[in-house]
Image (tube, rainbow, N blue to C red; front, side, top):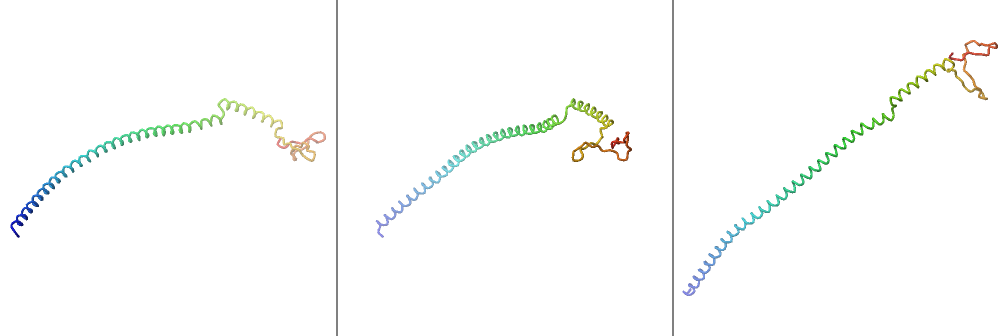
Length: 165
């Protein structure tokens, strides 16, 4: 190798070293810049996440308020339904009793009527109300049941004692 070639090689090596130092400096700057970008990106992500979480929290609170309002309405409807059913359970039997049973005035009237009917029945029994009459024979003539063991009465013994008297 000649001096000029050695010189050229030396200059070339110096140029390569200078380029390598520039590249290393650029890589260092790039690393520092990347770390800075990393912080910027993290801060932006953090800010975005905080905003989204605030919005989510706000929506959750609105949902909770809505659900509480729905629950209050459902509770009111449930109470109204229970009260309505309880009222109907009390009113319906009262209405049935009122319609089906006689009033106190009707009871007094019916007792009085029963007593009158009982007196009439007793009077009728005394005067022959227990007589057993029936239609007999082909001509459906009126017949009476008599006491066959009792004696006959009348001039021609044509009167008999009615059974039960």
